[in-house]
Length: 201
Image 1 (tube, helix red, strand yellow):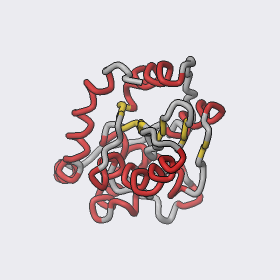
Image 2: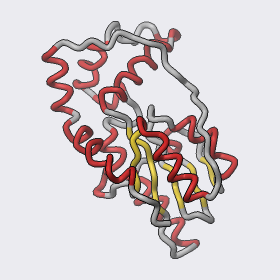
Image 3: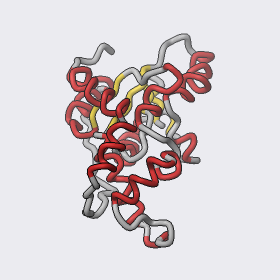
Image 4: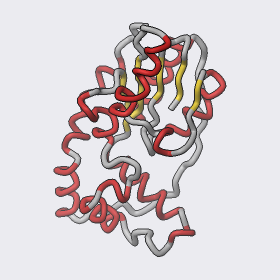
């Protein structure tokens, strides 16, 4: 999580959606950068509005706009899978295939994508949606927004690129996953026009 005091902007770091690259690029510009523990680094919309925003508003009556990235749901899960496969120190718990990983995820989502279950929960939990959500796959729209809001040119590094992997799913697994992530697919589809909207700052 990054807080930009003067600009009244807060970046909420959606896990596995480019948050590390954003933090590397923007930390020098932020008034406060929360890197650890993971529960605070990846504070979601509900926790921000319940705990952090009231604290900020004790210091100023201004509203702080929240912004975050969302990754295409299937690609988001594949990134988690490749993360586990890359972690050779944990080979006993690493899933053998993407299909096996998805089946584990369907049984208990937060056990495989800690500390959150779905991106929709992270971005809209507690009835408090992040103010501005951008597609991870449309990074230029996000950086244009930052350029405008922060008043400087933003260039994001490409880091933590996971290795390629076989992402084949059995038809039944694919159908069950799409049903489980229905809220994520709906949210992702809803942000295409929002991401292209001009800044109101």
